[in-house]
Image (cartoon, rainbow, N blue to C red):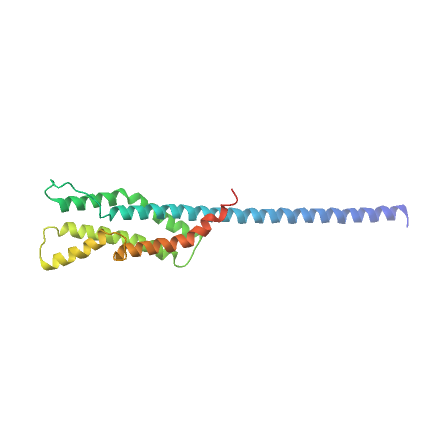
Length: 197
């Protein structure tokens, strides 16, 4: 074997070594990029879940406030029931932005997490609010109606727009169930980055 043959072998081994090192470097870079992408997706999903959980908590508080049985109207006000209903309508108006945020979160959760059934839970909460709004509006429109049918309807409407969230409060129980199920789905995702910050 001549010196030129030895140089050729060394050159070939060197080229193979360089190829091997470049291949390892490319694999490490690809692995890091994949890990970074996975972490970014996980962070985005966690952020969406956290935002939705905050919106859900705020809407839950708003619904409880709107439906609170502990609202007070001064005794000296002649038309207490109408004033009481206007107070509830104002509470609904004051909470509109919270429900818009909940709808935004609903879309974000659907896009990022795409779970079956979760969309329906958001819709359940939004529909419950609509029931409350409709019951208050119906009551306002029938406040002077004293027929037997109107009295029966007023009892039903009061059960909808006023509640104590006990086992006897059907709307309150539906609200609590939907919120609990959403929280059970979203909490694990929101906690994705809890130990990484």
